[in-house]
Image (cartoon, rainbow, N blue to C red; front, side, top):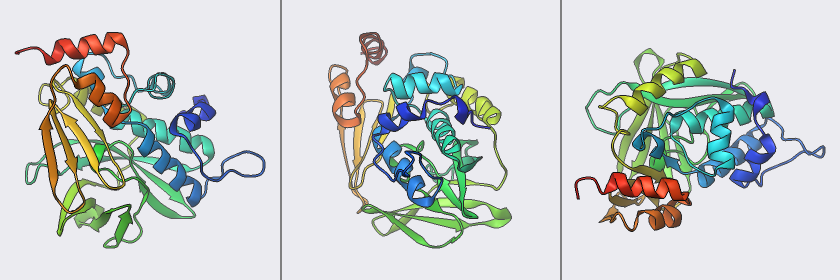
Length: 279
């Protein structure tokens, strides 16, 4: 399903700095400890970014294209790339992986289309939400889906899953004393071909949030960091945030320092050109 047999698993594990459990034969086992370790390492190593959309380049979802970009090219990616890569790796290890389509709820009461890709991984008969592609507010570790209503601490942050009508599950994040919905998804399974369609909308439609602006984000144990347009934001678990403007000259250094994203000369020139339009 996820072309895990085509993935260079060793290169992927090296890219994310995997330090989790390994069996005596050198293989990874499809157990909960391995799932936690892979998910956390991936979330901490590969930044969320949609710069190719900004540059007007096609976003390829073939597993080798994703591997070339995120693993060998050490770039980041957005949800379809990130979670397709994670799905391929987990499938290669031996996990049971299925896709879901989620509806973003971070804009309050605004009804948005289903455009976010997430994964459900089944371990010993229990489903776990896995998502390394939601940016700075996304989970660092798998979230259990068998216990709706439970609070799930991850570092200094706490997540919760609420079951709604029709089997819809909503993921929320506690900021200060307030629970804030991140997204919701139905039980319907999504396949890689479905993400091709969603990816086309997200990377080309003029109403897509990714078209026409810089979006680079990264979760963290204590602080969540996001660069949207020219505004750099740091979110704290108590609900507070800090914001500052970033000049075009600063952008390459900020991407490197804050997100571990070191762009090549061509990309730096393109980023500078796009961000100086209108100056």
